[in-house]
Length: 93
Image (cartoon, rainbow, N blue to C red; front, side):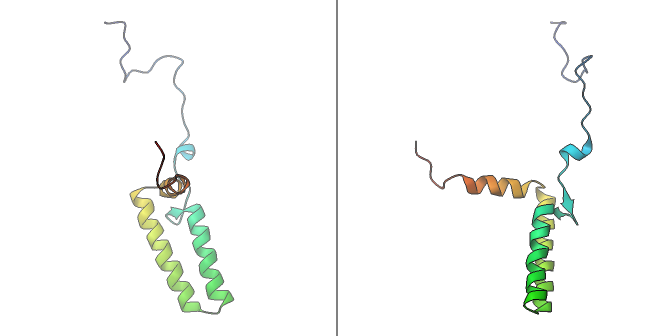
């Protein structure tokens, strides 16, 4: 049994460093990047296009705060939601 490798022990030639940027989610102001861009675009369209400045700011602040809260709980929540929406509500056996 001494020939078995210890799971915590590094094996020579089988160590590959992974850069932090490859595994961390891309956040923009604490919110997922794609969601922050969509939120800002929607708030900008309402604030500038419809000239409803206060409504645009409220939508942006609420949407950004909600997405930051969700990203703190699970940084991959946008990908999980996309995958969830692809599956049907009821699967056949």
